[in-house]
Image (cartoon, rainbow, N blue to C red):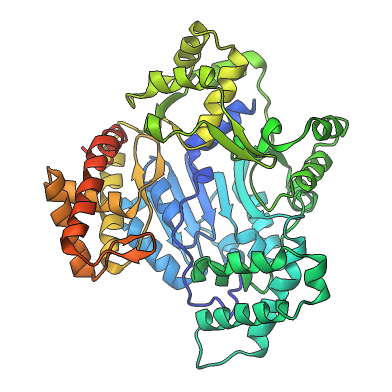
Length: 510
């Protein structure tokens, strides 16, 4: 894998991608009617800052291995997982070299998020060779990438940005400065009202929106020399020769027809018998911009009876507060409302944040007049929205719990180095959960013995003073210490009431 000069030495964003959570993957495959592998060994290619790698390795008993060619990123990932000993191995090797490493054996699960779009064909060939040699029969692949057709019109702008940096490279400017200058140049060009803009009138606003994103993200995403979004059938031409079969999107909402396709579109697609061509046409209908997919090496379909038996083995937990769950989902067709008659009984049953069996939940819904098909869809919708999570088989493991506690302490302490890592690990769900900066501040306070809202506010204010930071509300800083205390105290009270019960259920707090 070759790092571009534009992004060399610039670390990627902190990110946790739940499609790589083995428990979520297994539940998704069961819902798709496929036998899921027992995931005991897993590998992440191009792990970036290593948050997904570290969280997944810490929160389960399986072994994870990963590589990323950027030494600084590999070093940071190693600092997160060093205490896990033989449960996680970090390498700073190219894909070609990783392929040849004799220490790397076969895996049940291989993951790569985004990196496929940014590397050249030589690296893609190395990735495919790795999948071919290192993914076990029946093994699962998670792969995400920028997709066509949505990126088609932006490609000339992306090329313009990279060309500007090539032609105006300065040793006196950082990659971030070059990035800023390239967007200013693109904006200036579009302000001349070129015919390209007349043919693509939304491009000016798109450039402005993109420019507002994090610079570290932009320089990796938009200044990659080999940036290559692709259609689904092109992706299939890489993976199908490896005996890989497409299963589904990692998020059910992306596949849910009623919120993404009109009746006419659904009827049109139904007539297409080739699944790869059907999926390619579907992407055109929804103007797909990013895919997050599961592929399997040798699929074993489940009969309807076997599917129900497989799903009955799962337990689910509600990881959101009832009042924070909006009965609305967004698809390609816009927003769609969820039926309260179906979703209310689920939320009422699970609102105590205890584990409930999949079969138990569906029997409860059936007693409330909800048919089995509707209950199955509702559970998967809430799961895909992030409100429900699957209970891990390692939820009660002392070793896993200890590994999670140490990793979470490292994440919390990273705030003292101005690193905002917005996730914490949970042994209960075998993966990560999003935690805001203020809630992380309160978690740290609770571990230090804070009890009342005032305690948490004082702890939070002391931290902000040490870091020379201020609370920002409506894009303006709070300059008054009194107002800062009031804000933190109110936030802490909500944390104690709404967040602590969930975090205790997830064993993030004791």
